[in-house]
Length: 359
Image (cartoon, rainbow, N blue to C red; front, side, top):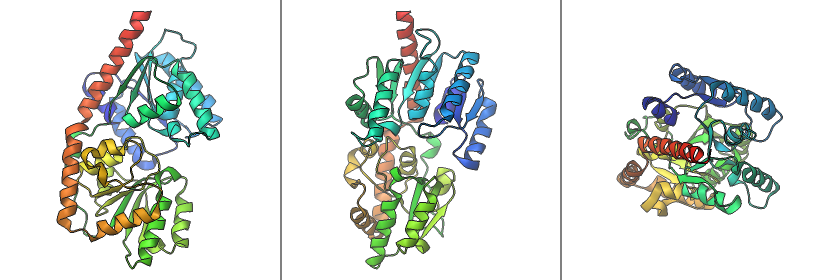
C-alpha cells in the first residue's frame, strides 16, 4: 500500500492484483480508499498461501489482466505473488513487461531439507530464469535466496521497507491498555504458542500480565484452546484486525515472538511509534534494531521469553521510554518510505534498460 501510494504520487499509473481471502473489513476499507487512485484498477482473487487448485484459475485471470493492460512492469510481492508475476510471462520471451520479484520470506523460511523447502526452492530456481530483477527487502532474505536458490544471475538489490513520516509520531497507551500487546497473524510462524507458554510460566512465578492479541488467522481457535489449557485464557484477549497505530494504543509494550520473519513492517511501525518492544532475533530483525540488536532474544523458547517479559514488566517507565526513543531514532535514520519507493523505481528503470539492451 505504501509503495503504491508513493508511486502514484510520483506520477506513475499503478494497478493491484491482490488476495480476496484475507484482511477482512480493514483490507476492504483500505482498498476502497485506494481504488479511485489506481489508474490500472484493482482485481481481487482468492489466493491461498500454499499451492492450491485455485491457482490455475487465478493464473489465467492474472494473465488476462496483464495482457489487457500491457504494463511496463509487473512486480510480484511474496512467494505466491512472485509465482503469478513470473509464470504469466513464461512464454513471452523478451517481450512484454519486465518481471520483478520481492520475496517477503514465505517459501525461503521453510525448514531447510524438508520436502516443502526442496519443492519450493526448485520452483524458485525455475522461475529465477524468468526474473528481470530481484528486489530484496532485507539482507537476510537475500542471503537465504543465494544459499538455497543460487546467486542471482541478473539485477539484484536490497531495498529495505520504509515508513512514512506520519508514522514517526509516538502512540500513547490508553488508560485501559493491556500490559502486553501482540499484533499480527495467528499462525505457527509467529510464535504465539511460545508467548502463551511464557505467560503460563510467568503465572507460576506469581506474575500475571494482561495480554491483548490483535489479528486474525487460521490458528485462532487452536491458540485460544491452548491458552485455556495453559490456564491463562482470562489474561489473553484475542481481538480482531485493526490499523497498526490504533492497535498500538491497546498495549503498554509489544511482543514479537516470531519463529520466522523477513523485515516485518509491524516492527518498523511499532518502533517508529516508540512502543517498547520485546522481539526475537529472526530474519532481518537485527537489521531493524541495528546497534540495539543485543536487545533481541532467541526464538521458540518459552523460558527465554518469560525471562525477557519479566524484566520488561519490572523496568522503570523511564528506561522503557529511553529504549523506545533510541530505537525510533535509528529506524527514522534508515527506513524511509520515500527512499524505498525511489530505490524500487530505480530498480524498475535498470531492469527496463537491461531488457532494451538485449532486445
